[in-house]
Image 1: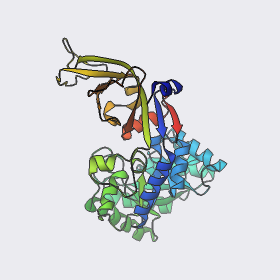
Image 2 (image 1 turned 30 degrees about the vertical axis):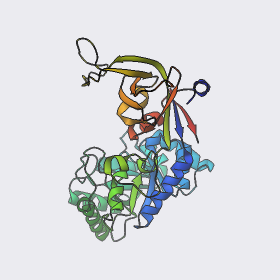
Image 3 (image 1 turned 30 degrees about the horizontal axis):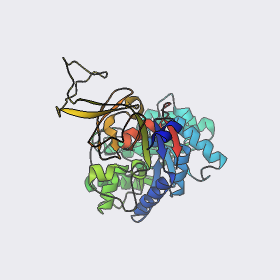
Image 4 (image 1 turned 135 degrees about the vertical axis):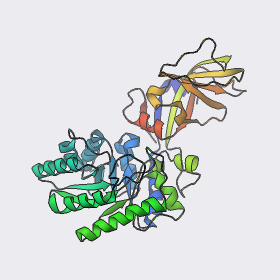
Length: 375
C-alpha cells in the first residue's frame, strides 16, 4: 500500500469485509442444515460489532450470542431499533456471575448455566422482572471448563429447573470443547451429550429445544460425517469470521468459506539492517519472558506501529506479503524481517495481515488505537 494512502488513514486499522462474513455464515448455515443442525452466530470474537452481527444474521443465523453483557446491550438495542431482525434470539455464552444475573436476565433471552446457585438466582431475577429466561445447562465432556462433570447430577438439575423453577425455561443442554483443554469433539464425547439429553427428555416428558454440540472446533467432525444425530445446534464464531482455524489447525476446509474478512493494516516506522540475535547479557522481556532467538545473521528488519496492546500476540498475525516474516512484538511494536529485494518497503509503507482468532478478538473488542472500517 502506498505512503499517500497511509497518510490518509488512521493506523493501525482493522478492515472488515461484511460481504465475506455474510457469505461465510451462509455457507456454514447450509453445512449445518444438511445435518439438521441450527446455527447460532457467536459475535464475541468480533467485539459484538453490530454491522458484523447484522451480516451474520443476513447469513441465516437463528440466534446470536456473546460472552459479554455490554455487547448484548448493543445487540438488544439494534434488535429493538430494527437493525437486527426482531425474532433473532440473543444468548449469553459465559456463565453469569452473581453480580450480573439481574442484568443477564434483562438483556439475554437465554444463558449458559453450570451452577445450581446461579440457576436459583436467575430464577429469582426472572420472577422479579416478569420474564421467563431460557437456560442451557452445560455438560463438561473433558475439556475442563464449565459444566457438570457427573451425568446424574446434570439430569437431576435439569428436572429441578423444569419442575421447580417456573420462571426459567429449560432450553436444552450443551457443551464446550477445545477452548481450554484442547479436547477434540468426537463421536464418543458428543455421543455422551446426546445420551444425557435423551435421559433428560425422558425424565421431563418433552423434547429439548437444543442439544448444543460446541463451537467452530466441532465443524471438522461435521465435515467428516461423524456428528451424532442428536446434536441440534452449533455455536459458530471464528469459523464464519476470520475462518483461519479449520485449514490451519484441523487440515479441513468448509465448502464456501474463505478467510480474509478481517485485515489488519499497520505502517512501517523503521527499516534497518540489524543482527537477528540480540546483543548483550539477557534477562527477561517486558512481559517477564525470555524467548529463544535464532541467529540468522544480518537481516532487513522492519518495525511497525502495532503491538501486543492491539493484537494480543504477534503469533496471531499472518502477513499477506510473502516476503514478510513476523519475528516478535512488544507492547506497541511489531518486529518483522523482510526477504530481499524489498526496496519498495520504507518508512510509511503500510503492510496487511490476516488475523487468527486472538488478533481479531483484541482488535475488534474496543481497542481505542485501531480504527475499524467496513467493506
